[in-house]
Length: 402
Ligand code: SR1
Ligand code: MG
Image (tube, rainbow, N blue to C red; front, side, top):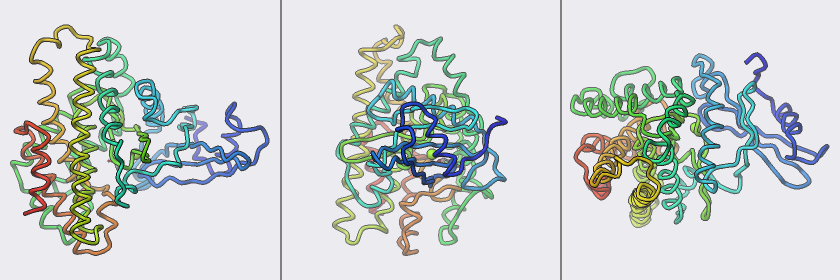
């Protein structure tokens, strides 16, 4: 790593110039650092004459959201580029194309998606994306099925797992999602007006048991290669296209963690409607869209996943009648539990979501925070009893009515 240094905007242009066949030799290029995430530098390089653009994403040796006091492996750039290439082979229309990866500089050069918007922003603006559930359901089914023992040669799966151990980024998740929110941790970020609700989390031993069970699954269940951080800030979207980005947290883990991440972020926006909608009618209408999307994501995922299992399964024993139903029923329960855990961490943990944090009116923000905590904790509490996606939907709608 001795050649590593964070690029300046000018250095990013020089770097882009020497990549074969991207830009015309000698053409005018501009560069802008546009990263607004928690961890990395992101440069957009644009060619003046053609308007052609690319993205250079470079890992920093620390977590940008906290500062240099939190060192973080540069190997996450390799994890991200390799995961993107695996995902592209499985779902070419649903991820950006990777042009190049540079291990020394810990950077990935990829397709620019600036004709899309970050989905979190799109949801905050109350846009609707009618193809999203089909797209993400297919992405989840294909990436999870074909990297698991259900759909991949089982010896090759073990070898691939070795390339995706990712201990440092997993540790972030283990701490920020499955530990800190349930104790008085310095990492937490709790607004004073919901201190009582946070303290209730710290003292709830029934909840702690469910979190322990989910944490153990995250630590030990190597079911499939996960994206690992599939929130709506990791999705670029426009009405006819969905692109999943940022798989630097990729590792072999429990499938329900990725599905739950998607559902949790839809439900966080659902909770945030307390602050964004001007009137009850538009609030209810947008909530109905989000709830339908929660249902459709699971339904598309399940239909795709079962079809792949029936048509492309590699394991004779797993074709035993009844096993697929058993597996999918447990996967739904895991999904509901991880949905809840991912909601709670975004209200009281270190890293929040703009859907709720950007609500200016403090009383409305508090209502949204409490609603998100209510939905999240009920999902965690009930996950092992759930039998259909409609039960998650019912608990979210009933939480509003309470
Ligand atoms: C220190 S990183 C905080 C969060 O940002 C990432 O997007 C992950 O969700 C992580 O937990
Ligand atoms: Mg990210």
